[in-house]
Amino acid sequence: MTSTAVSPAIRRWRIGLLVAGLALLALGGVVLLNDVNPKRYLGLAAWFLGALIIHDGIISFGVFGVNIAMRKAGRRVPLPVLLILQGAAVVGALMALVVVPEIMKKSIGTGNATLLPLDYAGNLGWFYLALAVVTAAAIAVYLAVAKARRASAGTAQGE
Amino acid sequence: MILDTVQTLLNGLRRSLAQPSRTPRMAVVIGRLLAIAFLLCFGTGIYSHFLQDPLPWMVFTTRPVFLYQLTQGVHITAGILCFPLLLAKLYIVFPQLFQTPSVKSFPHLLERASIALFVSASIVQIVTGLLNTYQWYALFPFPFRQTHYALSFVIIGSLAIHIAVKLDVIAKHWRKRDSVLLDESAPLAEPVEAPQREGAGASTGSANAGAAASDGRRNPLTSSPVKNAVDRVEGVTGRVFVWIDKTPPAEPRTSRRGFLAVVGVMSAAVVALTAGQSFRVLDGSNLFGPRKQGVGPNDLPVNRTAAAAKVEKSATAPEWVLTVSNGSTTTSYSRAELLAMPQHVVELPIACVEGWSQTATWKGVRVGDLVDRVGASGGVTVRATSLEQNSSYAVMRMGPEYVRDDLTLVALELNGETLDLDHGFPARMIAPGRPGVLQTKWLSTLEVL
Image (cartoon, rainbow over all chains, first blue to last red; front, side, top):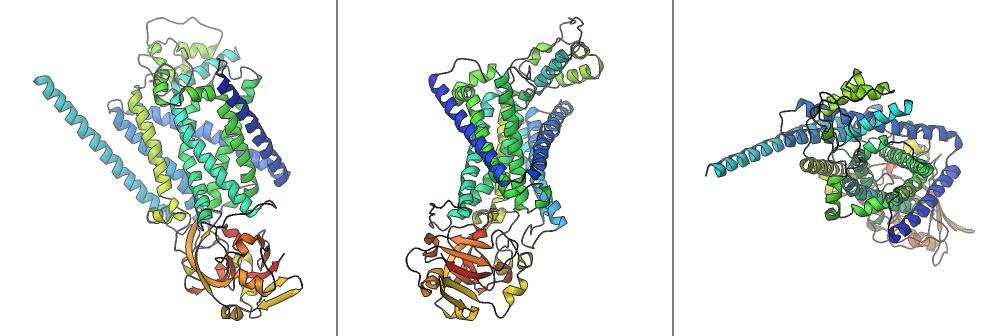
């Protein structure tokens, strides 16, 4: 907690939020104890720990590495172009995070034909194709605008 | 020595992780959106919970008829929206993981523990929530509904504590005009002095790494081999940090705008491509929703099939009757007798707890008419029992607000056809504004309580 002086209003809100937060945490604990068999706690704890390890230990460092590698590899590439490429990669990765489990569950089998009825792998392919087209178009637009700006700046300097 | 080594590594990591988009202002901007999404999920989730397990005094509104369709659609859509928002928020604050000293005091330890709980509970909640919509229960070593309910309090409680702890930072960066100057001078990671490295001629793009420019000085050797390696560019550790430090810097304004644009595109994409399962207006762009409107028997998706409920024989038996009772007064109806009664047609959505929903045309007998025939008068509660086996939803209670609603039917037809076996043949319940699990299928008895 920051040690700098805070206004009385913030102090009051802070105390109120802390009390409400602790009460809700306690309620969550009571509900868990009442409604979930203690035999399941170990599995739940494993999920909690796994979530932290997968996010903080793998995904975050992976994103960091990819970011550094792309900036290294793209030394001569304009930053906006790199950002567009990075953005497209992140959008693609997020969609995979949501859709790949869907594809896997569909391949394992579902309780009925109306659950996961679509061709998710095919749709993901179409999505990536569209993402590639939009990314290429965004880069092309940026490069054209940048070129026009340089040309207009050159003309202004020549005048 | 070990502490010194760890501190050097953590400082190096934080400096290397610094990015223009990792500012307190950005944390507040994304944090606000994430908090709204969490609160939407919490509010709609609590509503759904109490619809299923009401407290004795609770009475629910039956209008608008699409209310539960809306609240549960918002629940699932906001839950999916939490994926890009939570990942973005965690990306922004990631350098905080490596703050030094790692623990300053007991309150600081509690604060860090509450954040760890908040982060892991949030990830578990949204991931299991998503997997639940795929009905991939085998992955959970715990019961979904009870755990989801308990964790919702843990998450909102942790959120309140997190806001309380960061309240002064949030207040400072709430408005853009107050925040700009603060952000320019103080990125999210508190300033970390960069070591003076030989050969480190460029910066990471962090606010502080510019100090790493080589000026020819060599830091004196210390008792920490890692600190020496980092400071003097020795070994793998030192070379990795210098390699990172030499990365071309990102221009702050462009980088921040790019970050926000990516979060916006991700959020729009996950909503637009999945929310058609809940909202008809987005049905055309539903590429990834686990349900598709119009797909299923009677042009409607199915949650639990007759086979899964083990009712295939009992529901199709010629001797099936619906028994309606009020104390000692009991009347039984075959399906033909129910069809011979006054029929009513209603347009009502079926809205599943998993978030998918679809409006359909139902035809059948008013529940109010059936209870009148066994002598019930005024507001009464009804207990409906299904033929299905091994289900916690085989018995359902319905309060007077539903029993006496003209739109509440024992449905016999769906979308102009005989009710399909998977939709509850020979007769099922349909009422306005209730979760699908309470629209009891394969009805066996109705008891006035």
